[in-house]
Amino acid sequence: MQIFTVGGAVRDELLGLPVQDRDYVVVGASPEEMLARGFKAVGKDFPVFLHPQTHEEYALARTERKSGHGYTGFAFHAAPEVSLEDDLARRDLTINAIARSADGVLTDPFHGVADLEARILRHVGPAFVEDPVRILRIARFAARFTDFSVAPETIDLMRQMVSSGEADHLVAERVWQELAKGLMEAKPSRMIAVLRECGALARLLPELDRLFGVPQRADFHPEIDTGVHVMMALDHSAQYGYALPVRFAVLLHDLGKGLTPTAELPRHTGHEARSAKLVDEVCARLKPPAECRDLARLVARYHGDIRRGPELRAATITRLLENTDALRRPQRFKQLLEACTCDHHGRLGWEEKTPLGAGLFLRALDAVQAVNAAAIAHSCSDSSQIPKRLHMARVAAVKQILTLPD
Image (cartoon, rainbow, N blue to C red; front, top):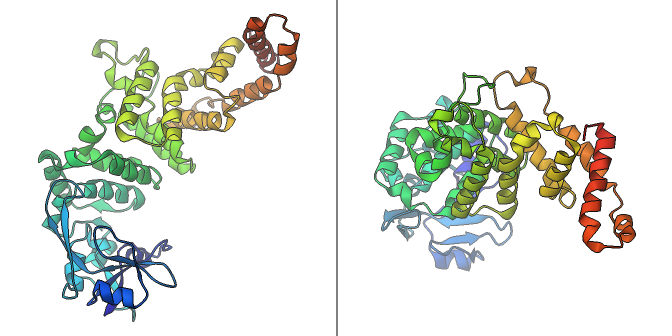
């Protein structure tokens, strides 16, 4: 029995990056032998075992054979006679198909080390086309390794997978998993760019794909279209380390602009309402966590109002705070402002623009929170008047703090 470290741990060590998790492949062993050595079986589809002391995963060397559509359509064969090279051959990228033995010797049958040095993401072999999740993984790796390029022949295979319909068999849960991971990488716009280059974005997120080529508003820089604006805003969210709900909201905030009638361009009147509706449709399809869905809907609906913050009346600001449930969900409201800040900065020359003024809304929120709702309720002889009186008191508080007009 031989044990090798494989995959991302070897890749990241060679790149000088910290290793988060280690995966091991075991050659020349049977499930019975692993159990006899104290390992605990955990794999459902193929033999994976947990080490009795470290609890790290050890998988028996295996091969794969396509047996159906999608990422689950595989038959696996794990046996003592399966070689290390056989196991590495089923992996997605050459940089992930490198193994290291206990004495440090590398096994690199597909020249992954050379591709690491050349900063290239390249598929291992023709079997790459059998698993559509690999399209998403490569796009995600492009977002993580920002100085790597995708090999042209790999892009060609990805295009074939899209045109053949293999990508249509991706299930929503896996799309969301990979999309969420990619959004949290260093430059998530590269993930979107790779998906768009191979045609997968039009299949997976057509609402986003059609933003490319749609002009921005006339007062924005004409050098960038709406799709590029969203990508710039998305990278801004990564630059400042914002949470996943913020990044997802930034990704979807302008979807409604893709439905603006051509005759109205470059104006986008009413696109916030269209964007919110499309966010609901995308979320129904991808099934993201509720916190991602809810924030994305709020950002789509209110980012225009927040951008116009200094122009708004006290009553309008107060209604915005009430409609976004800012009093009960102040942390989510702060994330709403973070996403809107990314929108504000997602264009050329944003450094020269007037700051968004998120502080204005935070001061207004503090003023509204200071209103004594219990005292107002106690003073009302007619309980039906409580909401109106409370709203009027909040407006007065915002007006006083911000010295805004009625």
